[in-house]
Length: 138
Image (tube, rainbow, N blue to C red; front, side, top):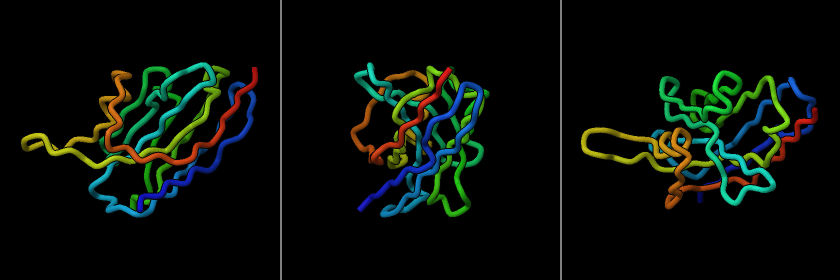
């Protein structure tokens, strides 16, 4: 049974930093990719923030590029999202997500990369954590 547990959310002032963690269990880590999504109060859908399937394969939404960094521990069972220079518009519920890597011809792809870059979500096989709130005050 896939289980994702987020921690590290909180309240900070604009310009501050937070590090979110996601403890994952219940799946074979080398066959999954992980990502962070967020949902603001007025949004209907979650938006992709960052995704990772290896240390050299990461992606970021334009709105967080250069400020957020996604990483994993060596065992790949913990994903992190280091957030710096936080802005009030980063205020949202942040969700950890995991999805199986997809084989397309000879390529092995993380479905989250496309969602993060294009904003088009297809979550047929996504597992979700319960979310952690991040609030940034001006």
